[in-house]
Image (cartoon, rainbow, N blue to C red; front, side):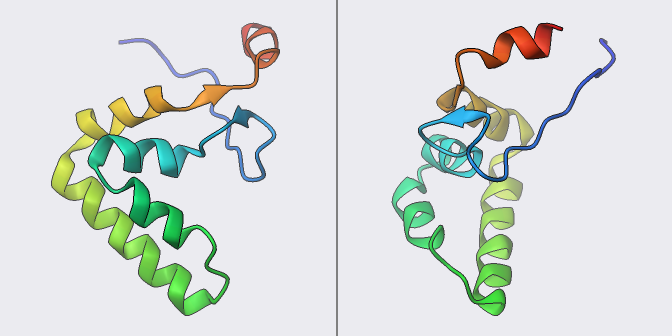
Length: 85
């Protein structure tokens, strides 16, 4: 097992191009349309409700399937140089 050396979070679209991680996972799990609807939420109560709904998708599908959804996202092209560094 390899040791994790870097974890990066993209909260504002700086690291990814196209779909967000949540959309990529939702696409794999068959909830892409629903995730598009949920992304515009700004009310804290609604956001919390959406997070719970997403968590239920992940729990029902299992980690391996959720991980497959990460293949649906595209890293910013020049980012690989930074990660390699």
